[in-house]
Length: 170
Image 1 (cartoon, one colour):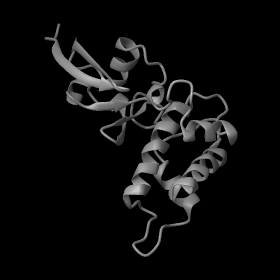
Image 2 (cartoon, rainbow, N blue to C red):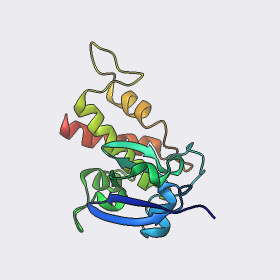
Image 3 (cartoon, rainbow, N blue to C red):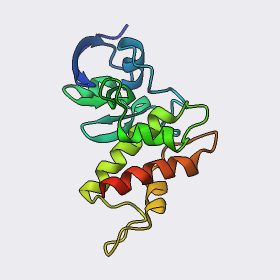
Image 4 (cartoon, rainbow, N blue to C red):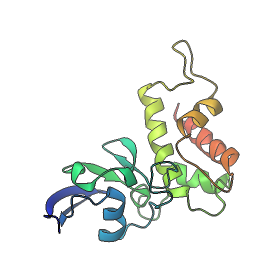
């Protein structure tokens, strides 16, 4: 048995302290210890994005990240995006644009899109951005969301949902 390590982490605005196995992923810690079932274990290899969380303002694949490496970090999961029963703008847009079918990837998609909007506000470039002008919004969104897969193929509606919110904020 491995020695347990102390962890202090803030998840969705609430501080948590635990002694955890150093081999445990952030995803498993959130799901099994904190009962946050929004982030999904899809591929468990960092290829699908279903486990996407926002850590210190940046999106990560939580299945690839050890929980102990997040000592003192601020983590947001899909459960932390709404204000009580008031959905975030992106959550509302996903509903309005029918941007999900089975819904398995949706928590990761929305967390990733939340971080995407922050990247756009900060002026962070992507592969399709040019220094002179931002690429067409749909192309920019598709590039920045390329780490999040949807097996149902709801991509057009996902892009439309994100674009509708990005248009409100740009």
